[in-house]
Length: 259
Ligand SMILES: C[S@@+](CC[C@H](N)C(=O)[O-])C[C@H]1O[C@@H](n2cnc3c(N)ncnc32)[C@H](O)[C@@H]1O
Image (tube, rainbow, N blue to C red):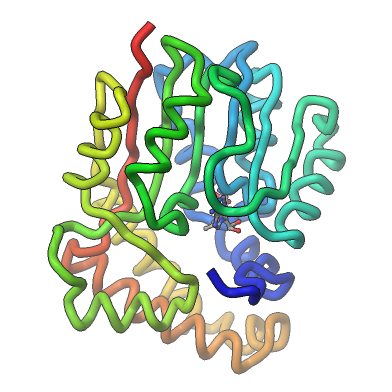
């Protein structure tokens, strides 16, 4: 990990423009609802790994009835944005945002009913350690319900994928569905289930690229900076390529700690 802020104000502003206020990942409230579909959130204490600028934590409390969400993240700008969002949405008393350093979660064993995450574990290279620690902080019977960006195989990234990851510049550490499932099972999770969201996001990302390159581009450049938008077009062009090939495959990941 570098000392450089990866999700700075410019990145937050742009990602929220493309994905919605408080979102640094695609899909909005509908995708969050799919990630937790069938998991009882109401009245529960939820940990949100990589809470970003806070929309997921707000949805989990305001719309899904979580008693409390503890969002953790590693950078100040997103933590400040998330606290601000919780205030704006009137749920600050039910959301705690904690800046952490990468590594074990700074919570006691069996603290949470649900561990949630949306497209953030891609930044945690050791999925085995992450899964074991998520298992540790969950109460018996608790659910791990996450979305993450995966790579479709166990080999080295293809040249196209390596090029895409380098263009993002976000220190992505993508695991395969097999490696993810094995990490979850090794941690002790049962009912482990992965759902491939590539077919959905491949279409959405193609639309996002068309929007970035379309008639809005001058206004986007005025708002976010021409160089920045040119770079986003380069990222999205490569992203769409590796989504179309299927090598980049966002997944939903589930598992339950035995009761
Ligand atoms: C793509 S954003 C997603 C944010 C949010 N979950 C959402 O869906 O809008 C990834 C987030 O993970 C955070 N992150 C990076 N490394 C992390 C780590 N080791 N532990 C927790 N969060 C981390 C980043 O700072 C960033 O806010």
